Amino acid sequence: MSSSFQVSSGDGGGGRPPHPLLDALGMVTAGNDVVLSTSVVSLTAEQAGQALEVLGREIARLQAAQLKVVRQAEACDVGKITGAPNATVYLRTALRMSRHESSAVVGLARDLDIAVPSTGEALARGAVSVRQAQVIADAVKKLPDYVGPEERVEAEGFLIGKACFHNPEELRVLGTKLLERVAPEEYYRQLGEELARKDRRAEQKRSLRYSPNGVPQSESVHITLPVWEMELLRKLIEPLAEPVKGADPDRRPIDQRRGDAFAELIGMLAAAAKAPVRGGRPPQVAVTIPLDTLLKGTGAGTVDDTATVVRPRPCTCPCTDPKYAKQSNEKPADTGEPKERPQPNGQVGKEKRRSAEPEKGEAASKADLGPGAAVDPHDGCPTCGGGGSARYLGTDGKPISAATVRRLACEADLIPAVLAGDGQVLDLGRSDRFFKEQQRRALAIRDGHHCNFPGCQIPEPRCITHHMTAWDHGGPTDLANGVLLCRHHHTTIHHKGWQVRMGTHGHPEYTPPEWSDPQRRVLRS
Image (tube, rainbow, N blue to C red):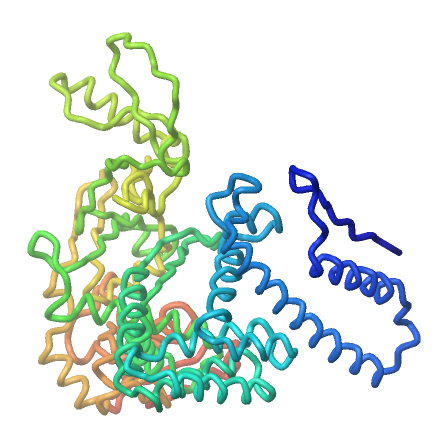
């Protein structure tokens, strides 16, 4: 393995003898040939360690030589060789450096020549690495102007001495501490500016995005918040995510418990006095379900968005993202027909609009609501939100099971609309269906101000008032038919085979399913 180092001696005139540096580099090249052609198979661990130390030192020394040449190249305008405007651009082309790397090399070459010459000498000795030299230069340059030359030299020497024992990241921390000791006012000023920049960036990155997750009847939410807001969310979630104690062990994994806690938090927000409103009403979800389906407990209801209407709309901003709006250089011919506008995901469809002719408007609307239009039911354009969740999906709503409807009917944030066979509304959930505040207080006094499920101590404010005899089976909304259950045990009663009834002693009692207790012995809180 060999190579040769050749020197061009011409200068466009009669010729110029090669510079001594080029002759020296020829010897370096020859030495490298010997190093690279020598087998390392027989090296012992000690010898390999020694070789690595020598290589590290010599690499640092070569980088010091490179930086000296870069400084001279900048002074003599090396870019004119290739027509580059400056040395930074020349290095990107000649040495195939990135923009950041070439700028850093030229900047460090200037600093070692002017700001921190002692660091340049240490790099030439191999006492510091090039990354350590960069850290030292940055630390010294951060010192305020009122710090004198002698103090700067002393600070530089201190960091050079510490470089023998610390890697670049540790040395950077020492440089920050040095600024704090030498110029505490400047340190805290810079710290405040840096933290303010980070805070502003964190606030600018605040986001919430809906996305499908491949799980039927489920979607995901990706939330990005500043650390202080995420900590507040964590403090709200974690107490609600504690394992629920009771006769039925809580075997939910931690991620599921947090998800359930987040759902509970949403319910608490919807019930809060300061919950966001739309059209003067708090956020609600309506579910339509046929009467026979509700009574049988089998089948499905349908989520209806009429309680809090969010009108779909197309992307309205000049979006250039091909994911949301396909741009085309071809101009369609003007045929006098209604023009079609680009839609998300490359779909093209007519914009829904009012028509002077009702039958044509209806036809156009129904055509837009067809199955072909339902492409992306989630977030659309990142600027205006259009083209995603704001698109016409071609469906009236999403189905949920009748059992889930019956469970959710206990909660005031869902309004069950019971339909007759011909679609007429037989019953619409109203506030008087649900237990009043004074009834909740009475139930809390009776049940001990916590979830009544045996062994559970979830406090009353986090509980739901449950009809022991379901309201669709004629169960009245009175104290004898009510019981306080936490959200987890409310789901347990509805979906896991547990039964609750009023006992002869005036308090609720619970019968477990056979899979939990084959003898189905009655439990009391």
